[in-house]
Image 1: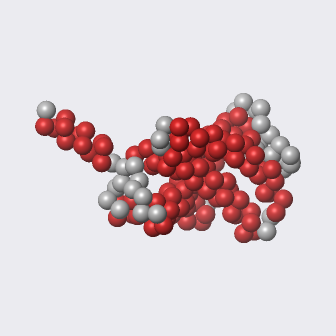
Image 2 (image 1 turned 30 degrees about the vertical axis):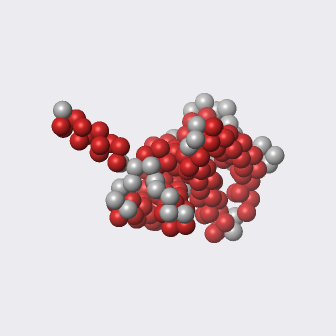
Length: 182
């Protein structure tokens, strides 16, 4: 899945739980947390595999279910300690939807062996994408039907956010109005 697809899916799932299921308002902090969570696995694994060559491929360490459980748990505990449990839950939602998004296409194609990235380091997939670049991934992916579909998901996510009156922007709007009044 491409970055915009991860962001869209993470936001839509998070919105389902906050606005539909629990009627809990989204905040700037929860939106940042879900956005960071949706991107973090790739922001860790891809540079460490593609540029620093210390990971076997772009889906290994931070795409592992073992690492994700520890990291999401740690973030949630810290967020609760600072009385921000929804921020921790938002990060977890983003992070776990990232893993689910990366597992989705292999599942749909019936390529079960590609799912071993979830079990790293207990199991590894024997491919090496070390010569790949982030720019190449984005350009190649954007020009595929999947990339276009994921762009459509992002448009849907933005439309949902706008429909909900752009939650999370209230503090920024208030600051802007105070600056205008000064």
